[in-house]
Structures are given as C-alpha cells and as structure tokens.
Length: 196
Image (cartoon, rainbow, N blue to C red):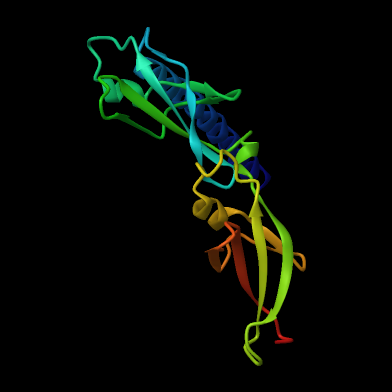
C-alpha cells in the first residue's frame, strides 16, 4: 500500500512538471505570435483625449496610426498595435476605423484611470421624503456638480453613471434625471424605505 501511494505521488508530481512545461511553452508561443502581429515600424501619432467624458471616470482617447508597412492591412495593423496611455500599456485599441474625411486609420481606447475631470459629484443631497404614504419609497435628490468644459460634457451620461451613497448604501445610477429651468442638473433616487 505504501509503495502504491509513493508511485501515485511520483506520477502526480511528474504530471505537474509536465503541465508547467506545457504552460511555459504555450506562453512563449503566444508571446512570439503576438510580437509577430505588431506592425514593425508603425507608430501612434500623439494619442489625444476626446473632449467629452463617456461615463463616470471614463474618457475615450484616439490616435492615428502612421507608417503602416505596405504588406499589412491597415485595420489589422491598428488592432494589433500597442500603445501607452497615461502611463499604462495597452495591447490593442478597443476599435479601429477610418474617420470621415481622413485617409488614416484611427485607434480608440476607453480609459478609466486618471480622469479626474470625468468624476462629477452630487452636492446638496436632500431627503425629499416619502414619494407617497405607504409606498415604501423615499426620494433623494442632488445637484450634479463638477461638469466641466462649459456644457460640452453630456451631463445625462455623467449623471447616469455617477454613484451616490445614502445611509451606507451606494447607488450606481439615479432613478430619474432632470434639467431644471435654472440650468441645474438634478439626479433623483427612489430608494426602498420601510418607514414610508
């Protein structure tokens, strides 16, 4: 019985070593295959942020791919070209396309780090009370603040994705949004409340 246990342990260790060797070989193959897909000599012209935020803490960046080898398809080269955005290496764009009026392929990346001007906040959180007696719903309202660039931001998208914490619970999206006559952007949450 002891011999059989030793033999089984030896086989297990042998299989584990073989698995690790195969894993290393696969990683080497994937790296060499990935490196061969990168268009040699091509480069991203300056990568720029778009003006508007795409969501809370997110902005799309774009760049033009230059010096694509003649034997490469532009879109394929674009989709396999790495870039660094705000100190973070990205293997490939989220999408590539020709922008209207341009003969160059453009790459686009959604960046969700280091975007402080895409992080509005709610100010003046107000408890507006129960929506109706017996409804079990309480309404909370707040003004959306920190929308920059003098109206060039899509306030609705930012409002939809700006979180709010009430009574130790974080709500990722408001129930309703409203732009008031005075220009204030208001987020409203209808939250469960047994006291209502």
